[in-house]
Amino acid sequence: MKAGGAAILGVAALLAGCVYYNAIYNAEHLFQEGERDHWAGRDSAAAARYEEVISKAADGYRREPTGPWAAEALYLMGRAHFRRGRLVAARAALREAANDAADRTMRLDALCYLGATLVASGDGRGGLPLLDEALRGLRKGPAEAEGHLWRARALLEEGPLERAWQDLDAVGVGDRRLRVAAGLERLRWGARYGDHLQVREAVAGLLSYPEAGLHADSILTLMTAVAREWGPSDAAGLLAGVAAAPWERTVRGEVRLARVQYLRAGGDTAAAADEARAVAAGIGLPAGRARVLLAHWTLARATDRSAMRDAVALLLPAEKDSAVAALLADLRTTSDLADAGLNDPLAWFAAGEMARDRLRAPRIALGMFLAYADASPNAPWAPKALLAALAVAPSEGTRAWLRGRLEGMAGSPYVRAARGEPAPGLDSLDGDLAEHLRAVRGALPATDSMAVRGQPARPGGHPGR
Image (tube, rainbow, N blue to C red; front, top):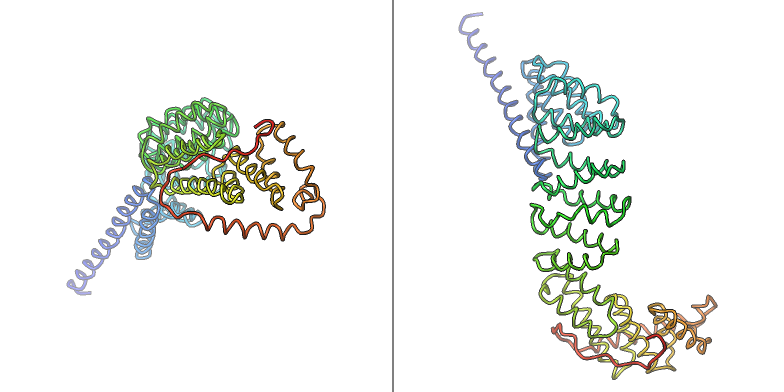
């Protein structure tokens, strides 16, 4: 070959090598971008970056599968496949990378992620030796930190636990981006093993990490397990510091609302109300939800319609919230139906259903059902109203009194059905009732006012009311 031809071939080979190197360099750059998106919770963006990594690294590897950057290309493909959950493809690429790597650090990195893929696929015993070998030689950094995380996961399944907790301690030292993942593992397994110390440490850590707010749903899911195993009071106590968590306000409010429910389920209704009022004083969706909670609690205790005005006062500051607006509309409709009952007693029946089903106000519902039954004692639907009243009655005395009234209506299809007897004509009665109730609701005044007006008509007295 002439000297000129040899020179041209040499330049071509050099250019081909540069193209290969640039492909791997670009793939590495894209992988780091994907990692930033991955740990920041931007899953869609991360997935797109990882797919680009796989494409570019695979293209470079096909160009020169025995070249000096082949192991690097395989390592990149393996990690990207791992992030995408393609464990079989990840294992194949990482195993080749570990075998072909000329650089000791790259070999250990590849072994580390290879061990992680085995643990992720359920083969903790197969992954542990690889992780042990890698962690003996790796320096502090992302690969070493993730190796500790995956070894902890394997040890939490296989034991010993003390080594697992130590591995979780080491995760955040090597890469702060992984400390939330380590905290979630500590919380999950601490709860499963009944280790209060580990659970307290996990929750305290998560509440102190600004980035943990992105994983509030996962935290709440795990706290549900804690509440189920140890009781809601313990769960509420663990979340006592959430008000000071360095999270976005709305996320913090959602977790505080979960704490409200734990406090209430644990019997500390006063503390639950205080926490709910604190959330309600804020802005956003949690504030609206807190106001709805407080309004429903007010209505659940209510004995007359004055509590409906109190509920409206609680709700109005957040009336643009959809849940708040819905409850305000239900309050208005119930109030309008109660007023309409003065002219058409069947409206009291409709108001009772609204109070029971929508307002969750059983005693207001009781009064409305009884108002209808007292005003229309001979109507075919009076027994149904008394049965509805019986279902929401607050005391045995009231229930006994209602059963006594129903004894005189033994021939009603509603009473017969309640006793488990054949009830001919029941479907026809219910169809007629539904039609009449639609007419009653259709006759209500159209108004945008959220005010709850008037006082209820007082039905005839009875024992226990």
